[in-house]
Length: 139
Image 1 (cartoon, one colour):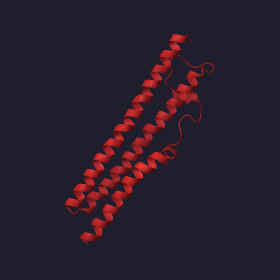
Image 2 (image 1 turned 90 degrees about the vertical axis):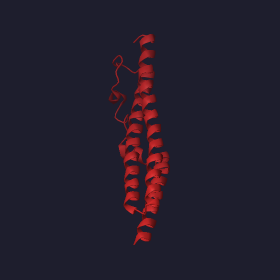
Image 3 (image 1 turned 60 degrees about the vertical axis):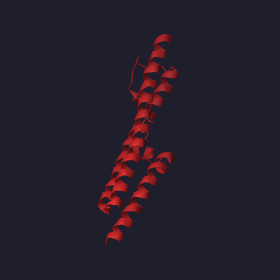
């Protein structure tokens, strides 16, 4: 592969990595916005079920964020493979499976990364505490 096409291929992969990282950032912003709005409305209207909905939303956004992070890691491995110019890589391929079996980590390994556990775990714990307080104060 020529030097010019090699650089273009790396730029294509880097653009995908950047989009995936941006999506992950946006999901984190939306998760804080949605869950705090749901928890706040649940407290103001004394509805523990609404707080529980906020916890479910937090879990769903946690999984979606982990999915984007999983794909980002896979494309970073592809980037490294292309960067090192391994033998017989297809020109302009975006198939990250050529980077090897470990290119895409299992989704649950990504879910339990330190940063995602701290970020989403704190949202879920706050939501569960809010739900419990509302449930026992309404009973």
